[in-house]
Image (cartoon, rainbow, N blue to C red; front, side, top):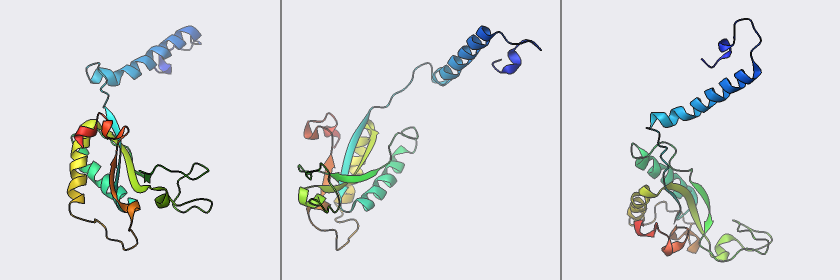
Length: 172
């Protein structure tokens, strides 16, 4: 037993023995999850990917819903990171190094060549299915028609670290 009841009755516990006992209990506590899976921790290969398809608030919602469809039973809970909105695809930044929605000291993101995107980290094994869902949605035309969402900032894009040279690119 690892609790305080393991000390000798009524006597001050031996500090070294208590320390060793505590370390052993902590080690066993850390090992128990590995013992439950046969002693092998399973790491999931993941890839960071960026999707753009119009307004990023719409895309963020859709990606979250798609990842929930994919994860049901196929991947452990928490395999997909939260979907975060941002800007990507441009080659320029403002002089202060920023890319902003509306900049009072520089240019807005669309003037810098960026598109609205949503990034998330997902299991590499799920990328092909996520890309298929993305292209199925894109083939239907504009998802959420908003008359203000026009121009290159709302173009459809997929981004992978390394671009077309990424080892994950064939899955797209």
